[in-house]
Image (cartoon, rainbow, N blue to C red; front, side, top):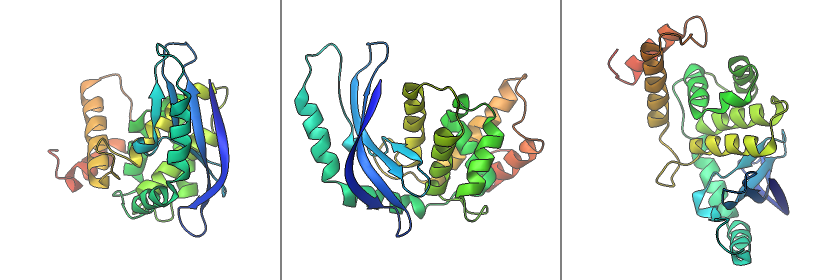
Length: 227
């Protein structure tokens, strides 16, 4: 189960990209997961959803504990007081570039959001075409927006709690384990390496597209990975 509270507050990724800020509240549908509070947002220009991309704005309690309303108040206060921090994070992601659009596609597939899409590769390519200005240097921000576009507009009959997990997976493109904006070289290298190993080790795995193996070879060379 999930709900979103709209604060009537707007932040800007840039002058032409306003984002409505709110609070996303989630409770596990099975009753065994924590009650979670995260920053939740929606881009005005395309109604793409956003969620859980700043861990410092994440609060939770387990169902085994008595309800703690203070957590909710703390989450609201933290998000209301953080527009400048949120805008800074989004601005950083706009200045960090992947090698090309093929790598951006591999990065999106590597997040695992393909499981929510009926046609993962075509859907994500369509989303990338809509969000990326220059296919030769897609930014983390554009790649993230392509993922949120796919989850927001290209999914059917997917429960909201399941989509929330997809948005949470995508948040790794805006924040790493050190609570910082990721280094795109590391993001791309990991996705390329994992996909290469998958094709090598799993004999029944088919390429995502006809020339994927050659693309992976070129990307591995660019990252100075052993070919």
